[in-house]
Image 1 (cartoon, rainbow, N blue to C red):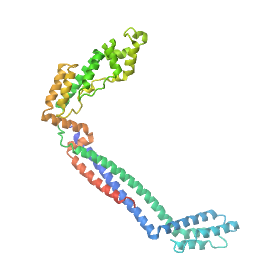
Image 2 (image 1 turned 180 degrees about the vertical axis):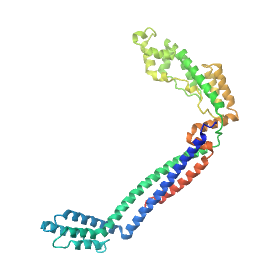
Image 3 (image 1 turned 90 degrees about the vertical axis):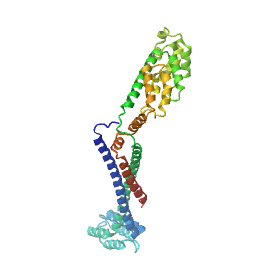
Length: 393
């Protein structure tokens, strides 16, 4: 297969894309490991103190600040004595923690800062300052929440990267399995006769469709359907019966379709039973419009060398009914060619070119697809290991 212009640059671009995808997958694994370690470190800090103690301290700290914020204006100076008494009671309850609670001294100091007959704004500020050591419990819990969110995000990114890399690796392995193809082969020797035959048989079929009666064409389709390699849609039973039993069946299909569009008064001049034509033809317009030569054409890439001769053997007697001798001769030449080693080589190259997108084809053409497989496999193995090791801190 001939190289396309700029193939060296295209191959370099394909290699670059794969390298970038592998790098991104590796970075996703590294970020996941980092976020996991950060979360574990915070969990260890909390576990060292005791999670229940940390949460109890955080709850008491938040409640103490809520009370301070609520009474910061009403309970100071010579203001509302009732608010002062209410504050004293609620704040005492908020900072009443066990002696072995985390940062218990901070609560005791805060309580002492406001244990006065008359409170000032400075006393409230002193209480807040005294509570600061207990705020570490809140910080730890918030840090863990943030770290857990970052970990979940990193894990999702790593899982997505893993899935993308696994899909890419599958495509690369498929490409590697085709690396034996002769990508430098000139496919013209194979493509030209296939295209020549397909164009000829399409033209011949279009002529038959325009010129031969519906009855004859339906006979042809039935003969084609009887061959294993030719897959056609047979006419519906009522349409076939109409073509066989009515004089209009001697008209070509395009003519019948044209008749189906006539008014009843005009159609009376062309067929004996306008209603029968409308019932049989008009309702099957979609089927009739779809009739074409595609079942008689050769696929691209064509069938393997061991199969194509059998396909051609079935096509020749069919095609000879509608096409000229030159079209049939092209089929015979292809049948002979299919039995050669050159056909197998060119057909393999064509199959590879057809199966691979430009990106993977360029990797095969450049001879680097095995290296890309190895890189992807190595990174995927690392990513899988990190995902397994970080499956819940």
